[in-house]
Length: 466
Image (cartoon, rainbow, N blue to C red):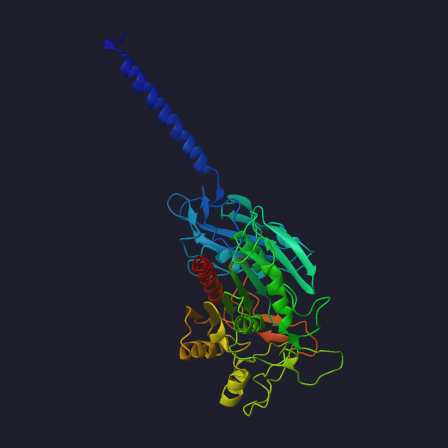
């Protein structure tokens, strides 16, 4: 075929069609880029996962503000916000850029989450089993010219197939989380701290990573003592035996993980029961502390926290020559006890009497602490355990992760870190509002690193049992 003296070949038509298709594709891409959107790399992530958030299709080289509102089953709402400068393509990469303003600074993939501040509104106790529900984050990005995009992200503490089982048997009070398969599974007993009760988060997230987890209550719940007073270790021995009889465990790996007073307890259980194969202790103590709360209404006599074979176990404050004056509690002001407790470590006789014989543990030990812990000096208290392990040449691996600038509230990542105090619910506590120390940023970074180390520690322990 000829057109104006030019011979039109099939090759020419093919090239013309290809060029036309490329032009259409280019227009389509430009149209897509012109639509502002929020993109995440994980559409349904686990709660502990770092999610990469990107903004696309916004004006180039302009300030773009993104807000993240987290809503929890207790009706509390938390908001994080940050303003970034978009690049030449109108994109923002939250995981790789530092904001120019907002609730956090520096580069942090999950800065919008851990820096979130509590919004005014109703709060209540979360309903039973709410840990199984997804936790929603409402993301909104806006630019000065009104360009706007939204995305709702659902994060799961309990991953697909994880099941929750309330345990009220053989005197035990707890919540068991099981991974999707029938097993056998390595298992972890999870212990709360001095606030009592059960925090189901750590158990559910452990099950999401393949571990059977029993969140075991030991005071401050129906059917259990009112305070952390004269708690018999036999109760925990009963829990260990019960877990060992379950078909999903069998004769496999069993660890114990506690935080704060639960960390003290985890070290004590590892030293007492040979069936424990590994110990994880966050913000712990290598010596035993006194009771917390009341054994009975009106009974304010000093008591031990723990008993074994019917006898109270010695505690640091008992006949301690270095016991000073308790910090004065003022209404509405948090109290820091770390220096008060640190002074009590000067009485070497009291320390030796109350020290936990951690070298008796039949497995590895992982300790985690923050150097700016105001609640109690967890780094120094964990070092007591480390020195004993070193002196007795503990044959299993042991390690102390000490995070500079972090406080008492080093947590598994996923939630806000901006509350720097804790209000105890136990009766007759010397101060109800406690200063936890640290900063939101330091605690968040410590929690993310410590959690990775926990998963590696557990995996190594399981392999060591095979």
